[in-house]
Length: 305
Ligand code: MLT
Ligand code: MN
Ligand code: ZN
View (cartoon, rainbow, N blue to C red):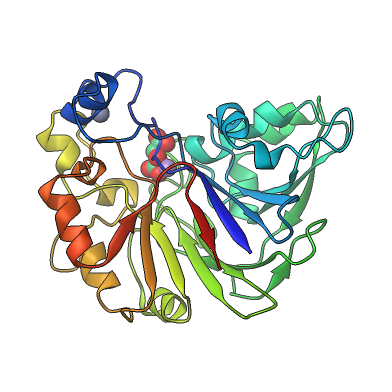
C-alpha cells in the first residue's frame, strides 16, 4: 500500500496568494530554505494504478499534473482516481470536486452524512455536479468499523469521528457534530499494517490515542506551531482552537501527544499553515521536531506501509 502526499499545506497553500508574512514572502523570493506546498490532499493505492483520492483540493489539477502516476491513460478519457473520500467539508478539502466534472460516469464519493449535508447545501457542490457527471455517494460510518472502498479492491479504511470544527459556512460551525471531521485508519489487508490520517485534529482524545498506538505511521494535523501565531504575525484574529486545530507547541500540544507513541511509530505532520515556522527547514522549531523524531510532509512524499 502506498500513500502519495499530493498537497501538504493547509487552506491557502504556501505561499498564499495574498500573504506577505516572512514565510510566504521568503519562499516566493527564494530567501529561505522552504518548499512551496499545495493544499491538503493525499492519494492511496493498493495496486499502483487505481487511487483513492482523500480530499479534493482546489489545487487538484496541478497535483494531477505533478503526479503522473495518477494518470495511467488506459483509455482516451481516463484517470487513476477511482473514488474520492472527504475528511470534512472545508473549502481546501472539497473544492477540487468541481474540477473532476468532466467524468462520463458519476464520481464515487465517500463521506459522512454531516459532510454530505454541508456540500449539498451551504456550498452546494453535489447539486452543481448533478448537472455534470453527478456523484455516487457511499455514506461513511464513524464507529471505527471497516469499509472497503467500492471499485478499489485492497483499499480498506476505518473512519472515526474527531473533535475539530466544520467549515465557517456550515450552520454547525459553532456547534460541531460527530461526523463533521473524521480521522481515517488506512489498513494494508495483506500485512495488517495501519496508518492514521487526520489533517484536522483539535484534540487527541483517549480513543484517538488508542488508534494511533495501533498504527505504524501517523499523519496528523500540523497546521499551527502555536495557538496564536496568526495573531502575532498580524495575519488574522483566529486562534488555532477557534479553527479546530491542535498546535504543536505547549505542554499538551501535538508534540507532547506524539511523544506518548512508541519510538518505532513514524510520526509525520501534514496540513501545514503558511504561517508555521516549521516550514523553514533550518528553523529552531523544525529542530525541535527533529529531536522528537517528527517529520514534516511535503508535496510528492511517498509513504509505503
Ligand atoms: C482549516 O482546516 O481550518 C482550513 O484550512 C481553513 C480554510 O481552508 O480556510
Ligand atoms: Mn484545512
Ligand atoms: Zn503567509
